[in-house]
Length: 439
Image (cartoon, rainbow, N blue to C red; front, side, top):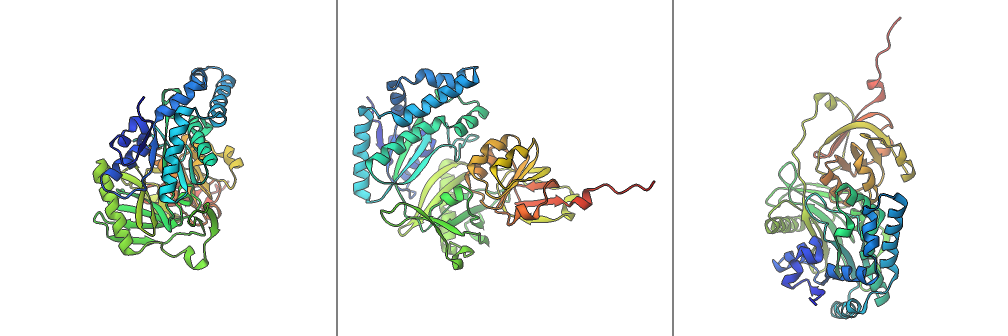
């Protein structure tokens, strides 16, 4: 039997067919000399072995193969419960625990356990935020639970919806797992190696990057030239931080007032990140999106995946005369429609086909609504959030980090979203109303 557990430093770890593109891309970057937190990968074959040992193959086929909706849902539930609740078979469990103990003993750090499905981080199907990652795992029981939860994430409702829109049957794929030491980040963020204007863009926040990924803060935005020179620095609104201290579980804390609008990166650090972005792009041979973290020893790359890029749209001149707000561009398209201001997920039923969703926080949980909206505007989030990645691949115009959008944009007005320039405009109700006709 082939080795199921491979260190990220090994040549085999760069095989996306065994470990998933997320793990494989990162391992390949590490082998190319780029800084990554080295750990180990669990082969997707381990997932297949577990499914077979639990007798779940028939249930897997029944999720998309059944014409009976209730039966399909029962099959999905059977898959999730089986993978989450049943013990891992000894052929997988024993070497897995041995590798984890060695990593924890060598680094002295808490553990990050990340899903790495065979179908994610590809051009057109990033699955950003649709699976699971567990940060700050400590103890064998929690570690094994996290691995099982990553397997089970393939059968979560949001992932199944996403696969259905991309013509992917979960029974035909499998889940690898990436295990790494937690980077005790002082600053984290993302980066796009190519913008519509021909430059590069970096986002950053204090602490761990989950606050950006989930759209919970408005990160700093740094516009760079292709040679890494900072062209524009726009400090964000970073009022809370997900942070950790050595051997302590990550916690959310309030950011001191003096740091909320203070830029996280120096110009030297911006240039260094720009250089890393170019190196990742050169290695992958295409425009890329990265996630990164900065600890006391320097920058670490946490992810690299293909980036969707679209040309700038030239708006009709009529829009230039109407109110505008600026934000973080998601990098795709132009959309016009009726503004639907939503302050709670329970109001999403108000959003109809072609409407522009205006909301406070644009987290990956909103992915389900991307199939019908004409665009998205949110008060929090940035260009490298998970939802922004999903919007780019679906061609949905999106502008995030638009201050007070839900208060300043009237519900029901005609609105335009420029996802490339990061501009939102709307036609005031008075301007849109037809003139009165005298009888």
